[in-house]
Length: 381
Image (cartoon, rainbow, N blue to C red; front, top):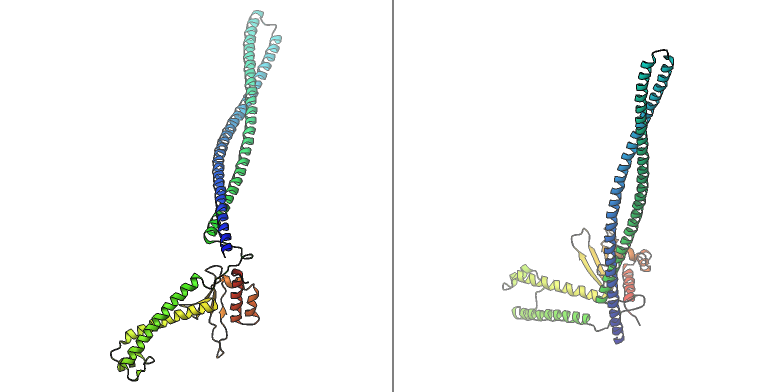
């Protein structure tokens, strides 16, 4: 036993060390998750800025393309005007050759003025066309620059989006790890507080004289002594009041009041009820100690329903429910119906359930279940 206690203490220390290590891992995971969240926030802001810049660049590009189209349209108009002026010059030349017979002085003066005016207009148009072509080339360069910038921003946006996705996946993984570490820490804390053992390799050794049995013995012994004292007092009182020393315990309250006016029937009924309740409690505890099953009858049910819990159950909420079968004529009730609960579903997959299906024996089923639970938690040697 001492060696077992030492091993339990060593396991407790080991569990505390494991708990500290898990807590350290949990703190590290939480710190990493916080860092990832900050980084994700920064990347999100960078993504928003990149999206805004991309949108502004697209707006500028659209405006530049519209301006370029406008200049191209104006260039076409100006080319048409230059062509018209060139045709006009040719017409003037033809008119001049046809009217050579006219007065030379007037014709030369008029032709000189017309030619100079047309040449000035043509030169101005050529200069304007040249300026427009330079503006077009400049806008084309700016448009190409904006396209390249747009491509770079698109690549940056794609990179930031992919990085954001990876960071989010890493954050989710870190959170999952933190939750697992928190669960392990809670489990280690619970095991360190309660003590743990492997049910497949370790069995608990229950001593014949242990604090629980001693406390139960003292409790029931005190109740038995109190009942014995009350019984002796009642017998002595009855012997003093009744000729022949015979107690009238089996009489009803009304007949007892008629025979013995000094006895209050209400007090006697209350005493009998309390005594019956105490005896029922002792009976239930006796059944629990003898069979290992604590049986409770559930109230407010259409048929009698019993809740059965084993003292060797792994958890407090593990129980079985049995209900009184429905009457079928004059047939005698030979067994109870098992209600489908979580524990019943688990036991239905074991060999013990064959006692119910194959042999129709509820006592054998309960005995087999009790023996299986006992072997899981108790070392038998």
